[in-house]
Image 1 (tube, helix red, strand yellow):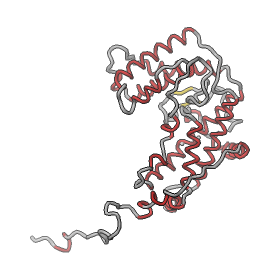
Image 2: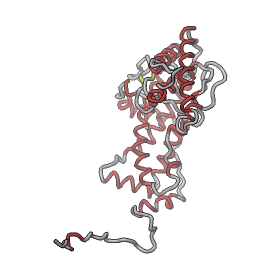
Image 3: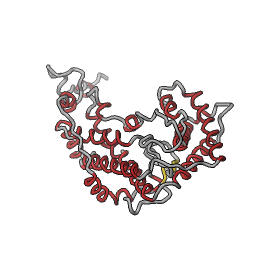
Image 4: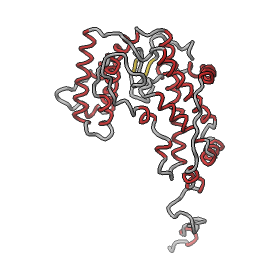
Length: 338
């Protein structure tokens, strides 16, 4: 039977090509032209004001306090550059051509426009929390480890390092992480490195388990246990004010991560024709880890911002999974982020 021409013929698009437009562009003009429209835009980030930040702490306290301990994440990044990026991204989203795209997404029910204001507020709040924690001595400690804890933690770190560098020393993704984890000299640094190696082991278990010499099935759990013990010992020297300030910082960072992801992923979609989109909306981990390759040259105190992992924070999961637990003091009732 001959095919029915009316049913077999494919319907042609209403417009195949409009002369004068980019033949390789398939997105609406609002998207394809946004990069050009942003060329002359200068982002002016909100400045930091301690009084305003204190008001934000009070306003966000209920939400921060509602974050349960099992969902808290340790801010293993340099806080100040991350906050600057958050504020710069907020300023970028206020550019009319980009803001209109966010408004359109909000009108379609796929975005909360208030998230743009939240981004600025949480960035200022987190910067305030970091400066309070730093001033209170949350990143310094004169405590010493017991000989047994010092010895065991050093041995586990050494094994983890050997296995990871054997398999991933030249890996384009893991290699740079390993260079940051190359052992330093501080106890806080060792705890951070143990957690970093444990994260790699957990993610690459099928590979590291093939090492016939240094791999031990118990090392991931031991690394996390020993790191927690080190952090607890160092944390015993912290004042209640330092603990409270760090608790606020940890909660602000835990809140900031999913908030930024919400703004960033939609923004990257809007800027898909912009070759600078990754620079305009960068990864917080890339920004926050830029200076972490510089190891400390003496034992405690640790340099502020070198990972911002306080001596009393316990960690049990890979970055981004919410595996951090609350500091020993709890602190959530008085100091109540992307």
